Image 1 (tube, one colour):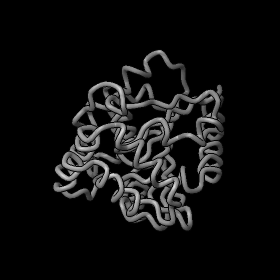
Image 2: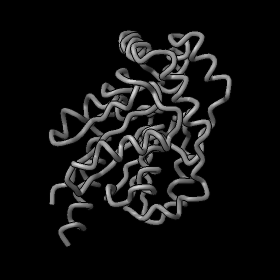
Image 3: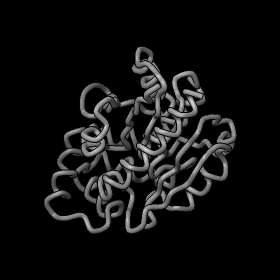
Image 4: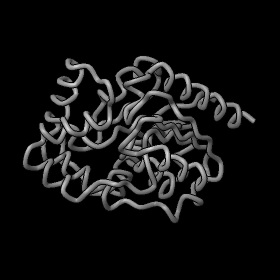
Length: 233
């Protein structure tokens, strides 16, 4: 059976996060979480996971849930609360527990443009000026409350002691230069999730699906093929 990729963006993100992958995977589902920009943003990873579970009830499987950063946290939580909806996980630049300071919440509410600027400077080494401006504008369009609530969600998230409960094939992807969720965070996921593989992408920061879109798409396609073969077996 043909696997269906479902893409979940990270904090401050939206469907634009997966622009390259949406073109590559024609049958995929690119979800915009509440508040990104439509609707009211949710305060917890669990609340977002429940929203995703409801959105996927009518989507036929097998389903590969692909999450970036906060989206990866949501994907893992989804696999725990609704395992029947998840046939594989691709976790990109994410963690079992995030190192986001509490001050980030207030900073996002007080000046979302500046918070977005800091996020991109730290997370995307070498981003060009035009792309930087476009990305900041997209995050700002979501609104200050959305970014603040996203940060609240990841600050409260901690799946460290439950990784062993994830029972689906999992691909963990991280950029070697990621300063937001560094390779050490990816290693924790790989060691904790029983059926997992880890791939590091050289010269990439926190947004490898934007920095190295072809590489990430190939990795996703290869993983999907493995899941399809296992499902047919």
